Amino acid sequence: MGVSKPQAPRPRSGGNQVGIPELYCQCLAAEQNSTKQDLGKLKLIFARGYLFGRPLFEPPPTIDECSAINKEIDLKIRWQLWEARKYRDILEVLRTQTKLEGRLFLLAWWLRKEKVCEPEDIIGIEVLRRLAKKLFRWLSKTDFHHAETVRAWIPYFDRLIRESRMVKDSSKLVKQGYDEKAVWAVFKKRSPISSACEWLAPRLGVDSATLANAYSRIYGRKYRAFRERFLSVCS
Image 1: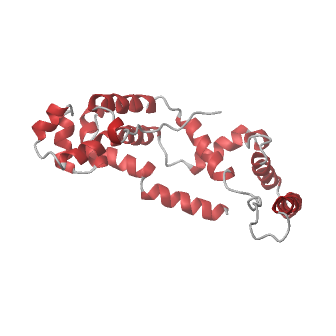
Image 2: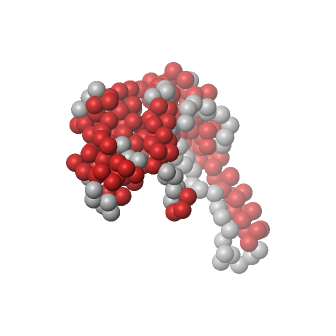
Image 3: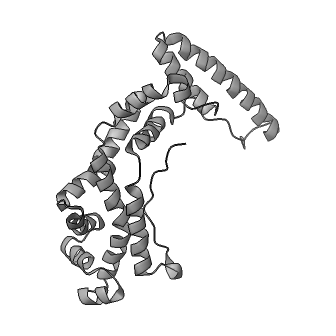
């Protein structure tokens, strides 16, 4: 269902750490894969998670180690009580929600949690698209691709920065296999994100600040703050 969110490559640790050329190729492949992502589908995935991913009921019971009776019997009893309470709770919230849209939303949330169907099967795909578009209107295609491109190269620059702290000579880093302009960017910026932005900017035809701002909008503190505010309003 939908597309998976692209993952930045992670270099292996210890003696199994990939070589520098291999790491470069991994990051390049991640960048190329990010450009194929459908932003509309990604917004739908995000909307499903934000709107319907949180628990609707209390978590199921677990074994109580302090139980005075048989632990398995105790768990069975408490599980049956938990199931019955879920039924009463869903009836109660549906009674208090008088608007049709609200009831459909609650049903969609509940049935997804019960693994019966997806939210759009209840509220309709067009409604979910409108919600996704409204919630993530700040997420533009250009910003997303810029942010994903920067993200794809962070493992490369993270490793380069670590090695540059031990090897102070830029020419030696180039001889080890690092891209020369990437080395220059690292000695100029000294952080994985800013170095990646500096290095990528000429190739993408933008300035490094544009890339840095796009990355910040998607993965920075503003994004996390937005997510926390949204979840608190919906809870």
